[in-house]
Length: 212
Length: 233
View 1 (cartoon, rainbow over the protein chains, first blue to last red):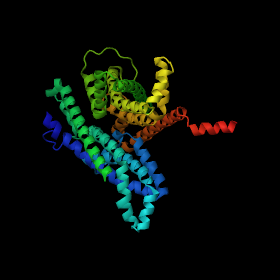
View 2 (cartoon, rainbow over the protein chains, first blue to last red):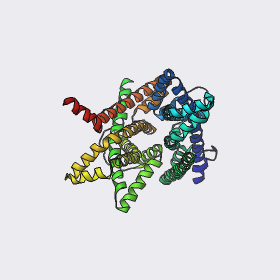
View 3 (cartoon, rainbow over the protein chains, first blue to last red):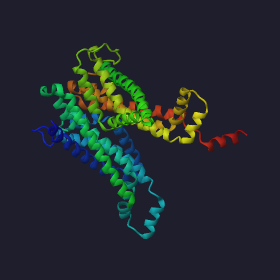
View 4 (tube, each protein chain N blue to C red):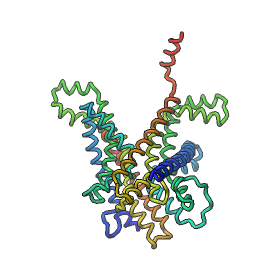
């Protein structure tokens, strides 16, 4: 049972906790990349910013389950890619707004110093502004990523083999009829341990970023 | 179809209202327990906070739903959730409890953080005012509201989105309506759009209500108060 929760059901591997982590990392990474692009566009072009802010606000107002349901019905997408797309969009809508507000708060004197030294604007953006934004927004992004790890559970409506789906499938089998509570207690413990490990890792990265 | 839609909205609203009310009560208990000097109470409260924050709501809802489905002797529970058949009302109650439990830890952290912003001197002032325990509590809530409301509002919007998990069981709600109508009519995107618009509107209403409360409970700014006095004089 533990192996199934960790690695997925025998005919659907990788699954379980491993797939949950893969999906959280993948969608978190895509969300961060899209968020950085959105924040940069938002800060550089104010007119585009308003329309983009409206779109992301709309995305944030829609439940993740509904987003998953929507992407699952998009033509040409497999269940796995639909899940990844929904989680990435969800992550982008939240992280993008965090990054936009931090990028807009970049101190003017740092921008002036870069101009005086004569750094090319693109390099200034990539080497100074974005690292500064990531450093200060890290705590807020970390909170979102921790939430994202747990939000992968929404993929249960696709019947996709991540941890919640595997726990549900195992709990519903006749063999585990009397032990369904144990199955879910184990799944909850795995989520708790993974969340705790992720919190510690993100704190470590935050500390290193601040010492630099 | 229109009746079903209204029933779905009503189902979501009732689930949200009842579970939010319970979550606030649980959150207050957990926050009070976290501040307790009694070691066992403190430990129990912290465990509760960490479990509710570390375990996904999806898991909590599935556990509650499956648990309720397996209970054979169910006591008669009040019929509260519109659209959900009387035979499944207990499942709806279970899901509401799970949703409340899922948000309680987050709310407890918000309440504790808001209380800590008051500082030791302000808390001591409240004690020496000679108010009753209830009066002190009311004053504390009033003082903390300005800090606690914005994150509480954000959590309540997230909580509204979590009510969609009720559709995993035979409980009537908006997401269940969208899923059901999409499957039966094949007009998938039309119903998804309707669902999106209603959820966004409901989220907006929650945000507006929170903003209104923020304005009502805003802490007075000394500079502004002085200016007003000068204007009158």
